[in-house]
Image (cartoon, rainbow, N blue to C red):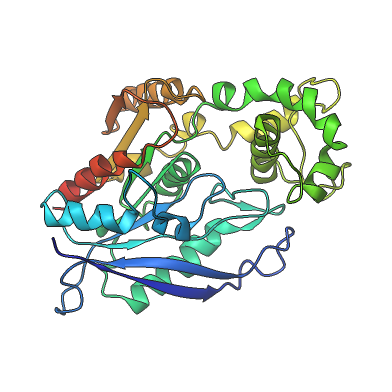
Length: 333
């Protein structure tokens, strides 16, 4: 088997300077260079793998029992002929709350701008990529899958292919069921602001902690408000004491839901060389239903896509990258 090489690049971000979370502006980005890169002068397609919630690019290199790192997977797929050699980029858009959803927010930072205005141009300048949207893909799992769909919708001039594994869709089912659980538990942590101030030291990080963290991280992305009464820099779409919905804030969340964005971005969606959506039939966050709704709307408007369901849940599914990278490779050909 031939092996590629991973280089770790460092970007000192300008657009992340002064972010409200105080998160680092220096970001390390693993870049996979495929077999044959070093010995040729040709240019290669590129793919950007967006990590899921609480993840960043460096975690794609983690060695784990019974699984492959992303570079090991790419070596195998390329050596077997299932995908063509390509440069694969693993950005770091992690925040103190666990994730940015790859969008701009006054509460977290300008992570969409960081990805599009800093990371992509840097990669095209430093490596021999085919710097064209038809040879640049974006893909990811969970929040990374959400980011892939959102970026392809909003920026088809940058990304001509997208693949989402169990990406966040139809917020009514994947987020809203947790709101009452958050209201029931957040008081035990002293409320929203206290939770945010102490979250890195909270132990144990049990299921209640994880549910609260996910919900407030999404609120920081979807409903930022520098003047929020809580002082957290964002608003929850419900009252943290009574769990009563704040419909105006919830509507701000829905404006970021891919299901509700299909009609707004039809031209972009129809322009993609590939839109690949898959999800486990037993997804713990109800994302199989969100994907079905999303694909129904795509179908209604004549958008071409690939939709697959597989016998599994939400966790431990990086093996599905075998399918998306193969589909991306075929579409680029």
